[in-house]
Image (cartoon, rainbow, N blue to C red; front, side):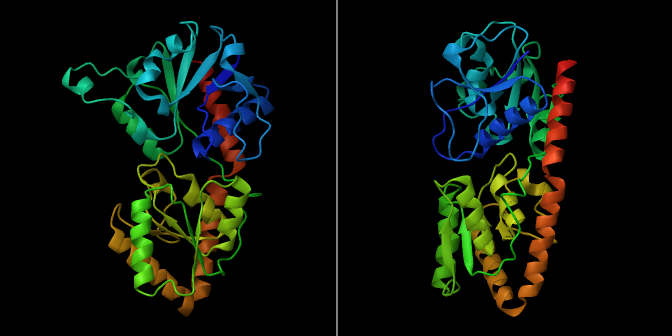
Length: 325
């Protein structure tokens, strides 16, 4: 038996692809045969360090005893993914849904108007289970398909890479790929109000994972502008690095956006967002020790709840359970 993780050929950094690679590594390390399956021959994600086992569709004979894991981003193609990839009809399939709010990505209203909405979440003979990465996503899919077997895995934040450093430098980091219109509004408001005079702005985009961690460790603040996220890796990584995190929990991040050590803001409320960041910046001047203590609490929470051993146990328990289905 081999577990094949179908993965898109994203040249830009993608947290979802990084997680797919890591799941593959963990399974192989524990004696369970697994590989990332790419359609583009020779492709490998290189924005993070990896030696993950890669196989290419044109060279691979997927047998009935194997499993095919399909990310949710393939949308309306998922129900026919076997035919599209010329894979045997008896191969069991798992949906790896890392972004539950993308579950219907690519579908049209025509499927609603016609009453013929075809999804893999009700095709239980072929799609035997789903894997998710947050309680929010699990609740979403359970509401959508109450009898589908759903397994939740905790994403690990690597403590050797995303290492805690007290937030001392006056630098704000954010990801401009996540709702840039909101990020721009917040930063523009702060700039025009004279709040950013002593601060540098560090965008996180198009850089390697090691550089992401370096920027976060140098920064005192991370602005979380992602929403409708299955989990939200970047805010959790920023917390592990010692950033004070303010902004949107993205829905999937509700479980770690605790008010005792983060500054959650209602989705889309840019005035509340800008006001919150301004308050934090002023607090850095008045009482930096309090914010450093909060940053330490946040990092400790992430290191405990999203530890590498927790993720590994979740993955192994999940696949042992799937094998019994």
